[in-house]
Amino acid sequence: FSIKRQRGAAGRIAARVLGSIGGAAGIDTRDDEVIITFDRTVPHAAALADQLMIGLGETPAGTYLVTLTVTDRVTNRSMARTRSVTIR
Image: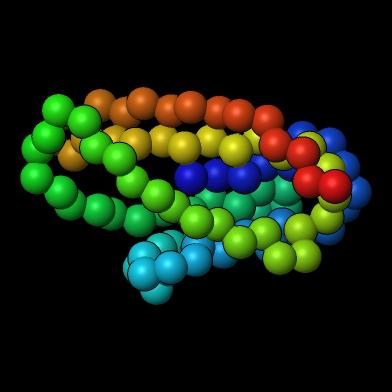
């Protein structure tokens, strides 16, 4: 999961993982981007639904790109989706 500043005021992106996986997540903070990684193991299923909560705290107003990447560790294939989010 990553949050990258597209436009907006300078300042630190204050992202953190909320909930039970927060302690297991790795956070890599860069100038205008935060990358959050964690491993999760579940049994095979045709479809999975999950929820990841991210707190943005004092993140400055602006437009950000939010990207979620999921990697299948068996096949090593990845899928990513990116959306633009505006914080006011």
